[in-house]
Length: 210
Image (cartoon, rainbow, N blue to C red):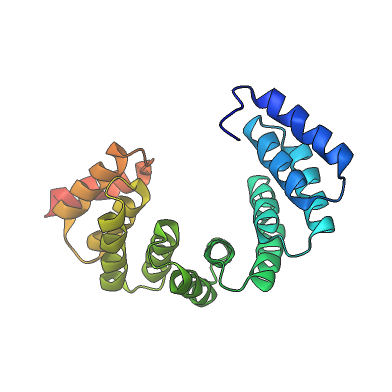
């Protein structure tokens, strides 16, 4: 939202008026979609993003937003489809590759996830979420040392990123360092990550045996 606006509803009204004057402006539709997201009107936001891509088939950001809305309602296939569209119209755009990697992870398709996440990091090596997903993929593949290394790279970039602390904890736990695993799980919790009750129990039991 432009700095001159202090009221989101005023901004929305101005965008709607601009669209009435120029109904084929994809950017106006996209900006209106983002504004609708900010007030929680997801159905209208989706309509705006769809209108944006109808008027500009190369607006990769709109496809990514549509993918996010699909993910919000649990539609992994829809999320993947829209992000694939985004990657096809802008191949070097890291966000859709990271999102496709995330979808592959949710489906247990680890090798496909790694391939997509590698592309995301090729275009943006400092993409924290992509690196965190990569760490998860490596963990799922049983490559715990590499997973821990990837999580440490994330934490160098973003020390307060809770999911990376959790990933690191899981990896070092598998590597046999229960004390460090507990320390890192506590860090994850400190930075807002909901560490599972089951994992806390595993840590507690392992500490007793150590």
